[in-house]
Length: 213
Image 1 (cartoon, rainbow, N blue to C red):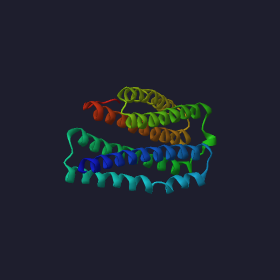
Image 2 (spheres, helix red, strand yellow):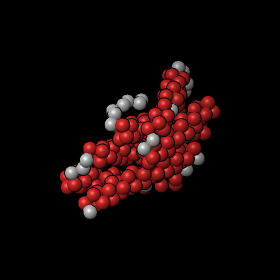
Image 3 (tube, one colour):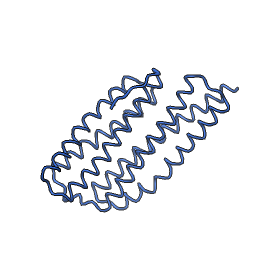
Image 4 (cartoon, rainbow, N blue to C red):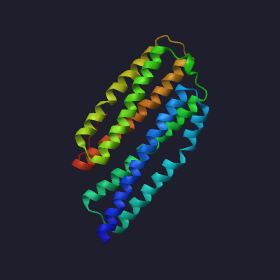
């Protein structure tokens, strides 16, 4: 009975993590759409969603304390709990960045951004979204090979981000491109959190600490 209760709580924890992942993805997509479309209503909607990830992260913490303090988990189960705590923190931070993007969308002037910069933003937005989706899939399926593959995508975002930064610092108009650079930095950080999740998958499955970014 005790083991069954323990397994039920582990499964509940995993479901909460997957729920957080879906919410973080939704918030990120909505926040970027609010910038693309200069949609203040959508931006406000993202801000209103922020309480849910916070509450779910607290639920993970409560479950973790209960599992570790009362049910004396085995080594593999302990890794499951530790990884869940770390991933929940990463996903909550992704949600925070989505809120920052949505707030930024309220005053940024998307129509003044050059076509080249918009193309760069489009590229890293799609890559970051794919990385979040892939990282959560790797966690759900415990797929280490997928985790490594997803983490490699971070290099593409880093290259685009630093190319944008170099271009802006080499004579582009200061005010609008600087705003774009801030937006790109939020996207780059979201991709980093997706990479962190991939690292947790490797640790969970293989008990190996790796740095993938």
